[in-house]
Amino acid sequence: MTAVPTTGAGTSHSPTPGPSIPEPATRERGLAGTSGRLLRNTPGRFTIALVAMLSFISVFGIAAITDTSSRSISIDEASGQQGRMAIAAFDMYRSLSDADAAITATFLPGQSERADLNKDYQTGVRSASTAVTTLSAQAANKKQADLVAELSAAMPIYTGLVETARSYHRQGLPLGLAYLRDASALAQEDMLPKLKKLQSTSMSELGGAKDDAAGFPWIATVLGVGALAVLGYAQWRVAKRTNRVLNIGMATATVLMLVMGGWSVVSWVNAAGHIETGHDSGTQPLSLLSQAHIDVQRARSDEALTLIAQGGNVDYEAEYKDIMKRLLGENGTLAQLDKSYDDARLSEYVDKARTAAEEWNDAHKTLREADDKGDFATAVESATGDEDGQAGKAFNALDDVLTSANARAAEHFTRETEAAGNALYLTVPGFAVLTVVAMIAAAAGIQRRISEYR
Image (cartoon, rainbow, N blue to C red; front, side, top):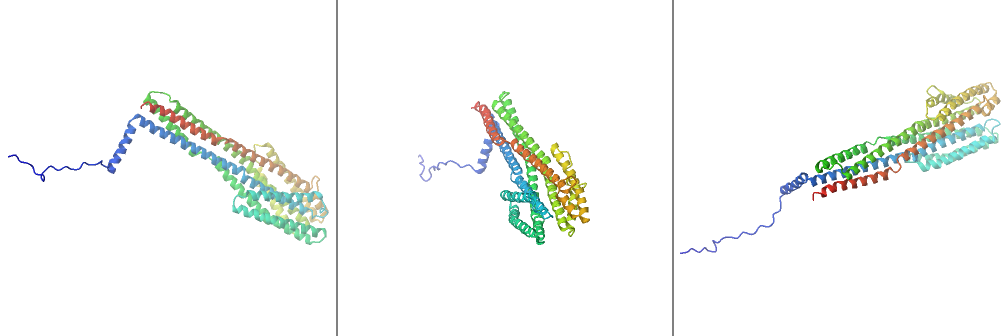
């Protein structure tokens, strides 16, 4: 008898399994396999080379543009805000010193109505007021702004004291001299030190901007070398794989990178050279000349105040001697300026300044001898006179030559910083265009090789 299988014992039908979800390890192996296949086949290798080339070209381009932009900003700071701040501070210092020296001289006997001295005072006050406006516009931080605000508030106080002093002096009252001393003290002990501080901080900022502008572009240079190395290696690999010696697209990209690198180096060398020249023949002598001019004006006021006091105050004469020692000493200001400059005219001004300062000092000694002997009229005549051997003429000669030397140094500084900025002209847009074109050329060159395998 044939056995019939029962339903309970029949064959069971297991459900059809659905699509399996790969485990993480399986996915990783898949990715690794894809990467391996990409590295094993030629198109994959070319694609990786293309990514590497585009990455290095773009990074080099960005670095070159960033470096040039920041260098241009530093040059603008040197020739712009801080440069104008330093020059305006010196202009105000000189103008205020000129005004103070002129108004002090009018208090000497017989000098109160001298038109030239009164004109010098008015001109100095106007110039100082104009300089305050410039300083307010160029203040770069709160500290500078506060100093400028204090100077602005002190100007009307100074002129008010001077006008009060002149009023009493015209009446023949000795109180005028007291007000004059208060005005001079405000200028010499409060306003001028603040201006000197403004100038020194601005010059320090200029030094920092100079260093930034003249620094070597290390990052851009390293990335440029890296981009050229990647391009060179990629071309060698492509040539070896395809048996084609020249890839026009990649060769074009290489040439463009060389052009950009050369342009970057040439513009940097040119800009750095002008910045250094501007510092050596402009900023450095301008700083020393400004100090010399400031000291000369202070000494002039001391000379007049000593005469007005008629020997009653020895502090002014002591300060005059200290100033002359700083000016004419072995390591004094003029000795530091007595160096070889590329500009023969500036060297000539410095030589003339030393001669005029020595003549003034000799005339001052003669003036003091006359005053100490009681010959007050001769001393006053020497202080205000314009004949050979008189202190007034020697001082005017020194003041004129220092003014010319300052203008010459400022001209050097302005011209060289402008030339430094011009050296970087069109570099930013030029580098951007070269970078984009180089990337397109490299991509086109290697893409043609990749398409041959499809």
